[in-house]
Structures are given as C-alpha cells and as structure tokens.
Length: 352
Image (tube, rainbow, N blue to C red; front, side, top):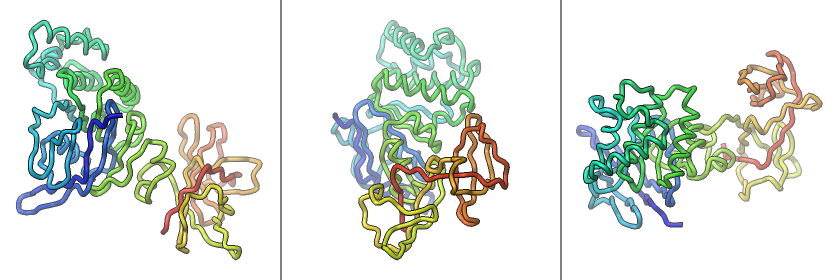
C-alpha cells in the first residue's frame, strides 16, 4: 500500500520571546492511503505543534514531511499552507458566524461554478444528514451539528489529508460516542487520510487505525489500539493507557520468576532476557477475574459502579493493590474479601 504521509526524524524548536524551546524531537510517523491516524498524549506533550507542522503553520528545524512521496517540509523549505491540499478542523470549529451553513461549506470552493458549489454542498450535507439546516446560521445549531458542518467544510475542496485538532473536546459526553463513530464512518466512506489529535484515549481507540502515543515532544509508541493497550513498550505508555497496577517480580531458589500471585508461565513471557533483579509486571483489571470459588482472596477497598459492571479496587495480602472488573450483580461491600484468579494471555514486564 502507498504511504500517503511520511514524517521522518522531525524536530521543532519554537522561539518564545528570547527563549528557544524544543517542542518536538525526532518524531517518526507514517500513514497509508485512507488510513486514520491519531496523535494521543497528555496536555502540553507537543500534539498540536506536530499537527501545525504537518499543516505548514510551523517551519521544522530538522527531519522531513513527505506527502505522496514529495517533500513538503524540511529544514530548508516549507510548502505553503494553501498549497498542501490539506483540510483542517479546529477545536472551536471556526465557522463564520455571519454566514449560513451552505456559505460556510462553499467557502473553500474558490474556482467552482455556482452549480458545482451547490452540488458539492448538497452532497456533503446529505452525507451528514443536515440537508434541512443549510440556510441556518452556526449559532442556531447544536455543538454536534456545528462539528459536522466544520468537518464537511474542511472536506468540501477534496483535500488529500484531513487534520483534526481535538475535534470532539467541546461535545457533550452523551452524543460524543455516536459522533466519533459517525465521523469514522464518513472518513472511511470518502477514503480520506486523516490525522486526529486528542488527549482522550477512548476517542482515539474508537476512531483510529493507527495511534502514536506522545510524551514530552517524542513519540513513545506507534501501533493499533489493541497492541498499545496489551503490549505497551514502556512504563509511560502502560501508565497512560487504560487502568493498571504494577506488582513486583522475584526470582525463587529454582531461578523461576514469580509474583505475589504465583509463578510466571515461561510460554507467556515476552522474547526478552530479564537479567535485572528489579522487575515488575503490569496487571490490567481484565487480567484479574472475580471467582467466588477461588481460594485466592483479596479485600475490596473501593468500588465504582459502571452500569454493566463494577470496577473493584482490591488489596491482596495486605500490601498489593489490584484492579478487577466484575458483573454488576456481584455487588460486594467495602471491606469484604472476594475470590480472584489471575488470567493473563501474556505478561507485560518492565525493569523498575
């Protein structure tokens, strides 16, 4: 498959008054044609700066950005924003308040005839089921409707790549999940290569084919949602993604690795030599199964009701915190001991 976008060893230094601060260091990331990518990380990690560099708003200091095999950014040249054929959806939608919906959408269709503009606007409004709103103004629309209009306005000129900066951050939680699914379906239907910036991992997992985890201006790991959750490359990713706790690993007299919950099965170990004596293992809530028949017991310290399930925070052997999901009809009191068993497909082990 052809690579639509290749970011290689990209570094960016921003000059802030007299101070020069490096915000991106040796970033590598690529996307195939029609792939949806996501840049995910905590606030201030450099996500938006990377998106701005891809869009052409920032001149990079080293490395390169290639689109369709052609260099659009390196340390010497920077193709202008308007010549990159990229659409941009901003966090605040940036719709023109004095224009109605159809005029907003047609804004980027500079060289089209009146009939072409009308056809394109109608086609896009139909795609997002907003045909009846074309004569309304942005303030007359809900947040979700404004977001859809901002999205199709960016899509109207048929960009090669669509860039979205925290596009769902101002959307009410009750409609966000549906909107994320709708946006993914639309991007897939139009086969458009897209990059979404977010700090919300569930958003990222629901929309992206490929996720880049960023921290302090660096990409820590790139992969699909499953691998990033189950096979985090380092402790930052393991901590940032999902829920989890770390338990210590010791080596017994026979040289075998064991945890407070029992021996480690060799066939589930990653293909790494663990020479260090100071190791720990990541445990996700889905690795601990609540089982009333089990002889291994842990005490309920906290619990969160989540509708279909409880998230229990447990204490094992008076010293090891654990997390466990259980169906919501297993309603145990705080302070109660419950049976648990370890059920892991593979181990995620780090040096302390």
